[in-house]
Image (cartoon, rainbow, N blue to C red):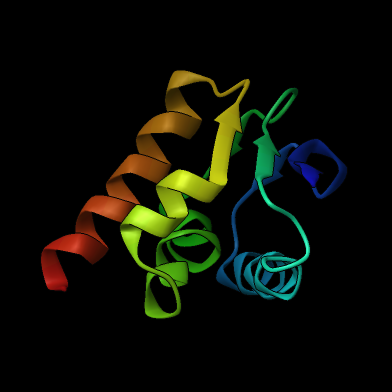
Length: 94
């Protein structure tokens, strides 16, 4: 499965949108052996979106499982930093 985030928006900023996207990811989790998150053409991902969409997956899946089942591609430095920050905050709470 490949999820093209530019089809969701070029600027991903709300918790509500992040939660909707996370639900879609988890609904497809067992259908696909690998999920590719493609950020081509996405300008910004806020910390709120990254936390809701990606880091909260840690409530259902282990970090090791997330790392082995997902691939993040075409990320700008801004997008990468937001997602890494969200995971770091969640893993420091676990």
